[in-house]
Image (tube, rainbow, N blue to C red):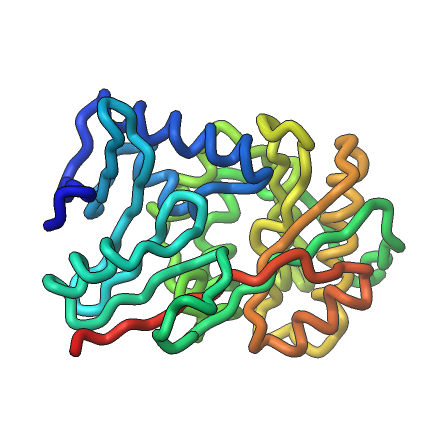
Amino acid sequence: MSNSWTRKTALSADQRLEVLNLLNRTEASIGREALDEGRRRIVVHGWKGIHYLKYSGPSLVGYALLNGTRKATIEMCGGGFDRELLEDVLVEHEIVDWWTRASSDNCEGDVVRTLQLLHVRLPVTVVPVPAHALLRNFESGRDETEWLAQNNAAFADHPEQGAWSPVDLDERTHEPWFDPSGFLILEINAHVAASCWTKVHELHPDRFGEIYVISVSPDFQGQGLGKVMVSQGLDVLRRKGVSDVVLFVDKSNIGARRLYESLGFSLQREDKLIRFVRD
């Protein structure tokens, strides 16, 4: 390990506070999230991960978090890239996937995935709920099992979204930001046919909204329910006083992108996952 970066398998309470302060300062500076939500949660809760810290004197000026073993995935605070850190990580990992929100022009690795951040200004046209369907809010203690089955089936081939466990759902529904009034369930014939889970970033200066998870059961796809649910979710956010909403979508998901564009979403930025292989 170089002198610039220090590797930690766990953060002390003081280090966790230092990292969170760095993330908050970075977000205030760049006007967007400094780290993926899942990785930020690892820091907040002190969960397992490989942490890289960079100091200038007594001050923490850099942070990165690595997950995985055989194929490591890493992200740096602010979404940047650091050649020195990459070389350190490649000593221990033959394959390294690096999430970057900065330009990848200085990275000679292969782009293996691109996430698009889309944005829309509210209000948008609301698509009515079909007459044979029931739109309601998620109910804890009632909907967990069926929602997980529906969501995992809808995202069967998705690297993050398709293998949620009851623990994954329980953790998120107990986060401070969780609001069941923003978690919509669409029932058809007493089955969960689709859902739209929204989120309000209450602590952000712009207080924007997010389409957090949107999914349609494979048994009910091809009926236009995706557009119904996204528009209904956007209307929930509008009624909460939100003006701007974002969502993430894989660039390769042409169908979903067309759906979002039809509702007025436009591209705000692209995040690239760049793969490096040890020589």
